Image (tube, rainbow, N blue to C red; front, side, top):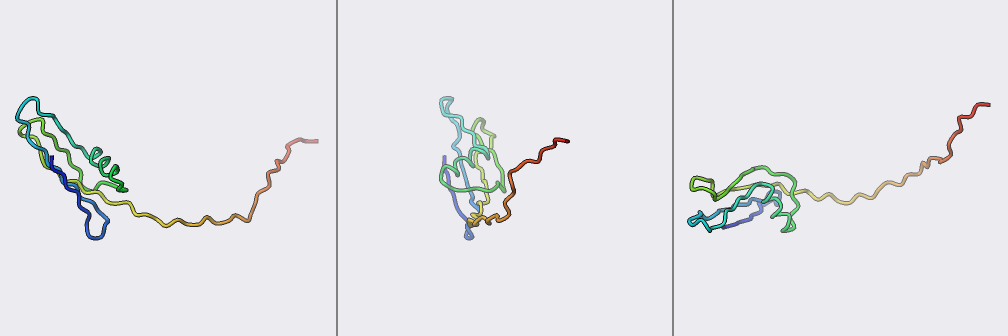
Length: 101
C-alpha cells in the first residue's frame, strides 16, 4: 500500500492518495478503504478535519476493483477563544406563591 498526504498552500485542505497492491494469492490480505477510515487515519495524525470534499472507496477484492483513490478534506478553522460577557443582571431565585387568601 502506498500512501501520500499533502496539504495545500493555504493549509485549508488536505489531500490523501492511496494505492493498494493487487491480490495475487488467496492468502494475500483483503483491504478496503472508505471515507470514514481515511478520516480516522488523519485524525490519528492530529489533523482537525471539517468535512470531506471528495469521497472515494477502494479495495483489492477482485481484479476489476478500484485500487487507487483520492480523498480531499477541508481542515477545521480554529476560532480564537472569546472571553464570555459578564452578566450583571442577576435574576432572583425567589418563587412566588400561588396561594389565594
